[in-house]
Image (cartoon, rainbow, N blue to C red; front, side, top):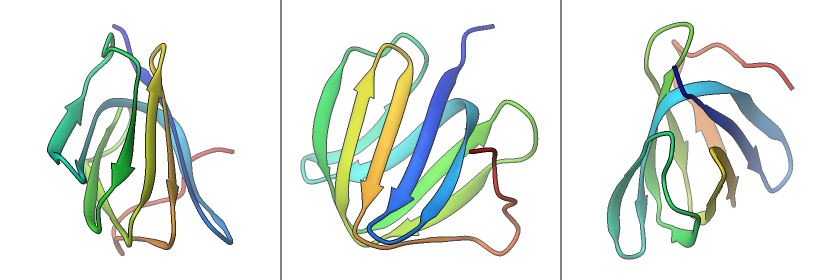
Length: 94
C-alpha cells in the first residue's frame, strides 16, 4: 500500500511526523485532500483543522493558524505559524 510521509512543524516547535494514508486541510483556495500519488503542489495554508489518517493508529486533527502546505513525491510538509494537536493524538516519530 502506498503511503504519504508527513511532517508538521510550527514556527517554534515540532508537531508530528509519520506515515499517513490521507491528509486533509484548508488552503487559501479551499479544502484539499492529499492521497498517495498526488501531484506536486505548494499552497498557502488557511487557519483551521488539519485531518491526518495515519497508517498506524486512528485519525486525528491538528489545529493550525495558517502557514504553507507542500506536496512532492508522496511527501507532505506543513509549516504552520502555530499548531496544536488534538488531545487524543499521539506524537509521531521525528
